[in-house]
Length: 456
Image (cartoon, rainbow, N blue to C red; front, side):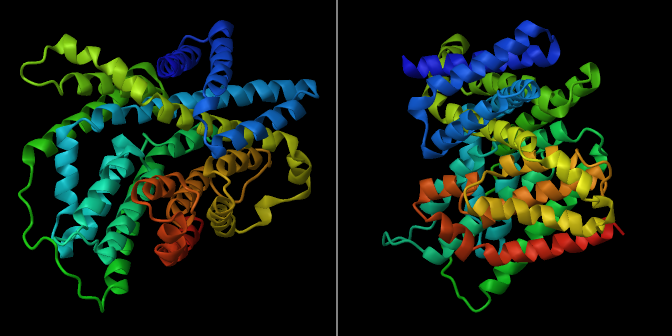
């Protein structure tokens, strides 16, 4: 019963947000606000310590905002932002309901991690990257257990070196989707905060940087293990599962093509288009996973129970990211940002230095359990209070995305790290500080060089 109520509330919030974003009107807007608050209340029993702390902090900030008339307006705007982020992540994460049951996804995942030693890093990193585009964090949840199963030797012991290399490859590949993929919360947050940007340039820059950083990850892996002779679990590459790849390519094509059609035809932004397309793709993908003897109506009847079984996970993600967005927005109002904007002339700063500071702030925040979304929303609101900026808005969005990506494998509190840790029982500090901190430092140095070239 509780699972069903959670699922119903999630669907109701999403419908209200979509109505407020398209049809508009006071009723839809107020309904989205009220339903998000209801979601936070009914989700209390599913909360972990993280969501509980975020809720307490959000309530405290809400009380502070209520002390003034302008604060009330910010409070409502913050709830609007929270409901929007919560709906986006819930609708996009729901893709995993179909993906986790897809034989094609499982087949492709196994193919990627069973490559010969020379190709294994590239296959895992690029596979995690590609699957992450439409599975989001579901790609982490899918591939981490597959990696662990592939690292078990014939005698039942675990090849810990192989496990380390593969888990690092997964993190290093997955993280960089945040630079360009429209299905990520990162791009939704940043494109909501910064509207005057060159989207084409941002996507091309993000894609090129992603390829470069995965290449650096591969080179660093080879350098790090140059003196190590590792037992090969698989001597011969498995056969390419063409049909499975074609099916996933079809899902991706439909997802991207329909999103683009909504953008062109109705003028919706990328995030809003995805919020319509993703649930439709999820239902159709789920429906056509039926067996030969299963009727389509019977298969569709199983969708709601599947949604209910995922309701707790979706609710926690929606609450955590929605509240993080609210906190970032509220902090930008409560702290004396406007006064600082008058006293600091950012235009006097070198553009590359300003950009270089942004990833540092995001990554440092992650070390003390501050979600990147809180830092990014806060910085985004603060930056826009300054009359002039030392760098172009497109470059600022790129720098913030890059900082968010680095925090994924440099911060023990990042979502991807916590998911892998929960699945593999590897401590988050091992996944980040011990295994990937040097790689993060190299990536940051490369980014600084890119910032210098961009602002030259």
